[in-house]
Image 1: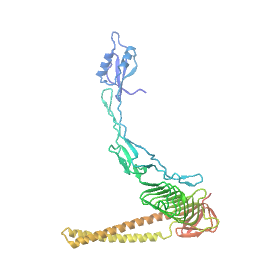
Image 2 (image 1 turned 30 degrees about the horizontal axis):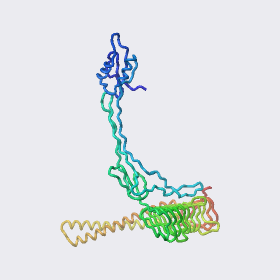
Image 3 (image 1 turned 180 degrees about the vertical axis):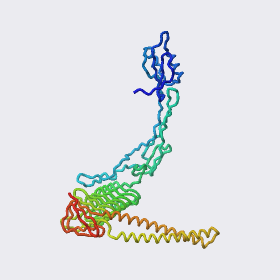
Image 4 (image 1 turned 45 degrees about the vertical axis):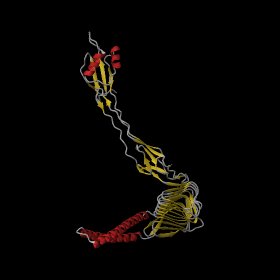
Length: 468
């Protein structure tokens, strides 16, 4: 498709020159010369110069047209030098930034934790990211000799985060210490991680670490593993040990606690199986089997897989419990609880009243403090200065109390929201000997029920089929 043209001069000696609208190309059309006249390279170049075409001219094109008598054809004879835009700066990540740490769901519905925790590990001084600065730009020249402005490449802001060092040129990011590296929400994070290559036992003693702890082997009886701010991942099995983490606890195999093993987590707890153990967490509990275990989960308990069984013990979730099989044919006593036991409305009302009382006390202290400060502004008074210090301390105490009650009020509201959704789903069978409690209302299962769901309605519990 031919470019739009504008005539850029008068015809001279049967030669017409036109220039494209964008001034990036010039074209020539030569008609047969009149008798007694002659078109020359010099006359054509002079015409081009007279109308301003001075850059990118191909004398070879013009000479060819004249030598070969190429008439009445429009041919491009001048071309601009294009602008070279600068390329924006960009970051090259030397590790995989797209890591899916979610456990795999197998065909039988069971959960495979073997790949969990496979976040890239780095060592101190290892290169993490390279910054490639913007490339220079270069202006172009149109056929009239004018500038074609090039676009400058953008310089990117430095990456934010923690656990890394940027070199003096601002182009190389390296790990500040050994740990694991992630790039999420445009933040580069290197978290210190304690990796125990073997087992944890009496030989190694108890383990306590601020950040994540990854145990490649087993955790044997009689030891404690504590992560103050991170998660705990165990590749092997756990016996009668005590695990405590600010975030998650993940057992790629499972736990046989023999009645003494325990797990406490501020996040979720996951593992293939839990037997004769005690678990308390603020998040979910996920497993393929739970046997004779006491569980208190702040959210859901999901038991899946080929068996997906809960048998014996007592499991409690604030919101939702799902399993394939609950109890067994021997009618082993199994307690399943969803929701809350106490009256949250009464607890909320009491919390609100305590908060109002504390806010009144705070206002009294603030008013008194203002009066003392006004009096002190008029002159120094040792007694008033002492009183001011006492009032400041009281204000801090009242502030702390109000904040604590505000937080407690929100926690109760969150619990109420979860408790309203409380239900228990049995995908296959629930056996006699199972006691089901939802928001304080209890029923005892006296005969097998298949593919059912239990939920609180009004003052009682309803049971309805959910289909196979």
